[in-house]
Length: 217
Length: 217
Image (cartoon, rainbow over the protein chains, first blue to last red):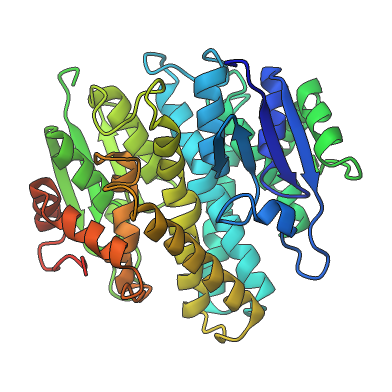
C-alpha cells in the first residue's frame, strides 16, 4: 500500500457501496467517510460533491490522487492492491467471461436499470414506445444474468470476482429507486442469497448502510 | 493471434465503430461484417440481433467465443492482442488517468448522453426536473472532458489509448441521435480534429460508415 491509506467516500444508497464491499473483500486498510443525501434533492451533499467535478459518489483518495467512477476505482484497486484477487488472469479460460461481466455491469445492467429509473421518474407512460423499449432492454439484461447464473455460481465462473462487486448493487440497493420484481429470477435470488452469506459483504453493508437491511430477496 | 481471425459485427451508427477503429489502430487482421438498422424500428436486424442475447452491436467472434459489450471487447482485444499498446501499464504515472477515462467513457459520458437521448425521444419537456437533471449531468461530463483536454492531447495523457477509442463515438456519431452543440467546447473540437488526422480512424470510418462524413466539428 506504499505507506498510505485509501479513503472511500460513500453516499448513502449509491453505487459507492461497491467500493466499501471491495475493500472489505480484499481486507484492505481504508478510511470510510459516509454521507447522507441532501433531503430536498436526493443528491450528494456539498462536502461530497465538491470532492470531484462529477459531484457524485464514489470518490476515493489515495495519496494525492482523487478518483471517481466506480468501474475505474474497482479496476484501479484490484490492479494495484489486489495481488490478482477478484480478477481473472488473461491466460485463464474464464478471462473472457470475467471481462464481459465486469463491463456488462455498468455498460448494460446498470445502464438499462438507470434508464428505466429516469423514464419512471419523468412519468413517461408505460405504453410509450420509448418506455417499452427501455424496460424491454432492462428485462433482457436481467434475463441474461438469470441465464448465466443457471450455469455458474458467480458471474465470471466458480469464484467471486470484481464482476460481482460491480453487479450486486444494481440487483439489490438500486431496487429502492427502481422497483424490480425478482420473483421471475430464481437464479438471481439464489445468487444474492449466496452473496448475503459472505461476511465481507455483510460487514460492508453494516458500515455503509447501517439502517438498511440489504435487499437480497 | 493463435491462428484465428477476429470477426467484428458492426451496426451502422452505433458504438461498434469503436471496435472497427480499435482493430485498425492496432493493425489487427479482422473480418468486418456491417449491418444496416431495420428502417421501421431503428434496431439491429435479426441476423445481427440473433448473434447475442443482448441483441445489439458490437459483437465479435474469436474462435468459439462470441462477445458483446464494447468496453469488454476493447479490454479483451487490447489485453490479448495489443502487446501493451493503447493501454497504460499499472506502474506508469498515467495509469490512474487511463483507468479513470477508460471507465468514464461508458460509465458517465455515454451514460448521460444516452439518458438525454431517451428523455428527448420520450418528449419529456425541457423544464421537467428529471430532464433538467439528466441534461445537467451530461453537460457536467462534457465540461470535464473539455477541462481535461485543455491540459493533455489525449484523455489518458500524451498518447492515444483505449480511453479515446471508447470516448470518440459519443462525441461524434452519437450526435446524430442526440444533437450536442460543441461550440462551447473548443478543446473537444481540437481533440476531434486531431483524431480526424489519424489514418487508422479515417480508414475505420470509411469501412464502417461509408456514406457518413465523420462528425468531427
